[in-house]
Length: 92
Image (tube, rainbow, N blue to C red; front, top):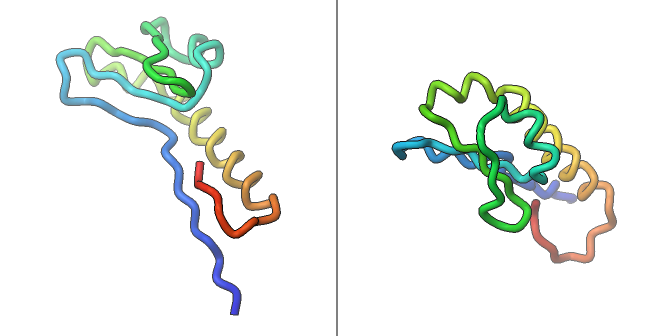
């Protein structure tokens, strides 16, 4: 019997309970900038970009950024599924 491994991944981190909410996405800042609706973009951690919002209402402006991030993570997971497994490894 073969059990399919279920892989999970994070495509965004929403930090809404702050004076200036922000959203982290696992994309390079060069890719995030054009999708960030003129909001400031920083690199808080290797592999992540952060968009700082004036209020949570700015989240409405970031739909394309969230779609892009989600698709990037889905593509990475599909790529991982196509690679031969060595019995170990980590998820995306």
